[in-house]
Amino acid sequence: MTLDFTPVWQGWPQLVHGAVVTIEITAASLLLGCVLGLLVGIARLDPSKRLIYGLATGYVTFIRGTPLLVQLFLLFFGLPQFNILLPAFVCGVLGLGIYSGAYVSEIVRGAIQSVDRGQMEAARSLGMSYRQAMRIIILPQAVVRMIPPLGNEFIALIKNSALVSLLTIADLMHEGQKIISVSYRSLEVYLAIAFVYLILTSLTGLLLRHMETRLRAGGVVQ
Amino acid sequence: MSAIAKPIVEVRDIGKSFGTHRVLNDVTLSVQPSQVVVIIGPSGSGKSTLLRCCNALEVPQEGSITICGADLVKNGQLISDRELNALRMQVGMVFQSFNLFPHLTVLENVTVGPRQLRKMSKSQADVLAHELLAKVGLAQKAAAYPATLSGGQKQRVAIARALAMQPRVMLFDEPTSALDPELVGEVLQVMKTLAREGMTMIVVTHEMGFAREVADVVMVMDAGQIIEAGSPEQVFSAPQNPRTRSFLQAVISRD
Image (cartoon, rainbow over all chains, first blue to last red):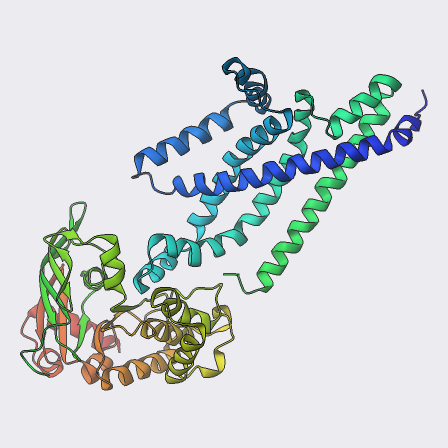
């Protein structure tokens, strides 16, 4: 058997287009995941606030305990039963964002709890409210510690985004499958797709390492 | 020191337990303006807890505390969060472990309080901070980050940070206990200057020399109670309570 990459070269513009969609959908769900994760992570700091803590914990438990594919299908095929018809792209972003938010929230919670208790005490003893202390003193220190685990999460999100191809979204995976369906060159095209994902994840890794170095140079280090 | 002045800090019959362990047992004390009260006693005697009650980092389950006449804790009930934040601005706190903000420069550590809480402009706050840093002998460190400072320098910045809120009273929780011996003096020197200038201070410490030299009142705590209080001469030269005597013997023979 010989490898023939001709379909890949011919379908290259299609793959690039798919990669752009993958980047868009990942970026949008990343943003959603970070916002959700921040809120939920903070909500899970204080078990004595029962309602908020309970809701946040329920969310994390459900999302982490069920397959992402099931969650995506619930949004895309389940919601229409209530006459809620969301565009595929929106379903993809919502599904990935909500999924990622659960993991980000644990990263946020862990990072905040790793900041020395004395920092909160010092801030509060100046007269800051809990919120001010969080915003001005705790979170800036916690963010630096979040970067390495967030990097892993971002990379996982890029890879997980391949599942949205099943919601008819024309992402990298989907475009690749279209090429395969006319060329029957599965091995070559999947190798090409894997290579493009590898480039995306590697670039993300580099970018995050760069950010971390810069933040640490700014004195934000224990 | 006038007898009719309103006390800056008044603690009445406070009690606190952690589980079954009684850390504070009916403690009462009153601190007049410009008074320096030094609290000594064996570890675990409740002196840090007492001090931390004075700005509600710990909340007593019984009794009351007022700051400059305003309630902080009333019959074991803490005031609302909003009132608490306002009252804490009147009370400066210096911690054993400094607790400087590592992501802010020395200058920003000092200005963050006045800027965020007193709504001071950046330029005003910078002027104030430079003054205070000069006062603690660290004018040249304004742009440095805390990680680059020695322990003694960190604690002096922490004092400047607390002073920047222009508090009515300063609480010191074993401010020199985490320092290398050769760095203790520079911190005590700053505290002595503050005392001379008339700052009201409550100091928990093991520095008997400082207590002897600076304190107006020395209080000895043991097992959650103040077992003895008086002038340094009274407490150090003629202690009444046998537990005070054994504590002082242990501390002084170590020196």
